[in-house]
Each structure stands twice: as C-alpha cells, then as structure tokens.
Image 1: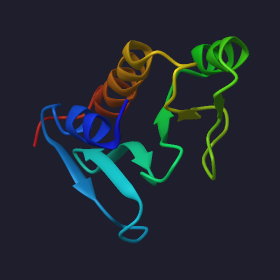
Image 2: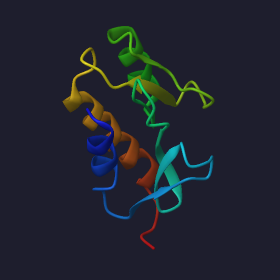
Image 3: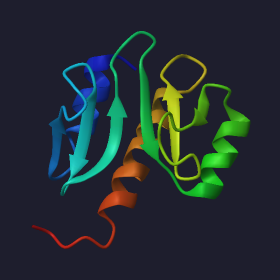
Length: 109
C-alpha cells in the first residue's frame, strides 16, 4: 500500500476528514471528531488503527509487522507496517474496522 492509497482509502469513508493536530508530518483521519487512523507517512509507511482487543492480539501473533499501538492504548490500538508481509486487503479491512468501531453508536451530525 502506498501513502496515496492509504490516504485515499481513509478519506473514502462517509464524513472522514484529515487533520494535523500533531504537526504537518502526522496525518490523522477522523470521523465525527473521533480518530480512526494515524499515520506519519514516513518510510516505512505505518498506520495506527483502533481494533477489537481480541482481534488485535490475534493479528499481532499472526503478523510480525502488526504491533501494539505506538503511544496509544495498547489493548485497543495496533500499529501496522504497510509492507508485503501484511496484505493490502488486510490493511484495508483493519482501516474499515477501525472506522466502524469509532463511528458505531455515534449520531450522525
């Protein structure tokens, strides 16, 4: 997955916006003011995503490039290095799951 593909996919969700609260180098993707993805867009490309705690643990065991969230609640967030060891389809599924987790139960504004 490229930086552009990651950005475009994150912004494809209803109400998704990009913000830079941590400075210009850190892209933060929000839906209804809730963060669902954070990426420094550096090399290697990494993205932090919210995740169901049980699934988060399973993904960490299955993929060495999925680790507990960097500077985040390690139970609920994973940081994923986007490379060949983690299939793009899985990264997209994880982004979608993160979006769904943060928007679930929120009233549409």
